[in-house]
Image (cartoon, rainbow, N blue to C red; front, side, top):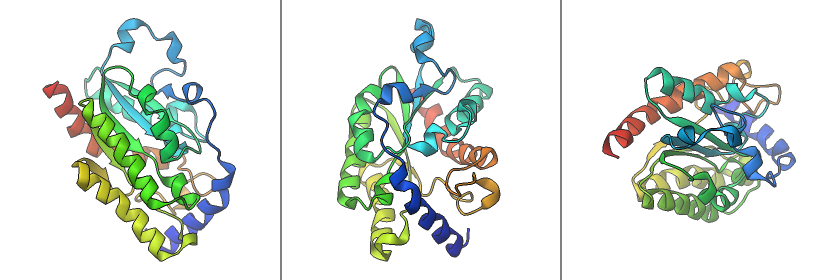
Length: 234
């Protein structure tokens, strides 16, 4: 993607970030990708190994039907691969890394094998301190790893509103956290999608169905070997 297109996208992000507030009830907002009503799942389904997607509106699938969000598309790929694994969509629109940290214990309920961590975009939209975001991500990863959970970190980009230094440090925070905790990272989850009007909804921010399919493909490329390894070593 051209740098100019990315800047246009990120400026647009800054104009709507204030409109997305943290959802007051994460328990109501986070649903399984395979079932929009988790309370109706039976005991055997709840006991299945899990991949938890902890994120914001990009994970929740804002503007899309639940079955079109990327966690649901990854669920389909896992099923097609013959793996009996449940993908839990723990995405909450407007969530920050601080919000994700607060609901982490609940999100990691069950036999979680892999945590896909997609948070930080709203920290950047609000210009929150990068060291705070770094520490929140670090604590979430540390907690997951202490429970024997493999982590896949999804990096994001900050809008240019707060200057080039903030943008550089924001990007570097993800790679620093991944290096410090030795976890896999996707440097930019929206790579190849951000800035392309054909792959985004009318807001120019959230991927449309085709864009989301590409995001799911990108995540699956990194997730598949991690999940396979986690299942065989457990």
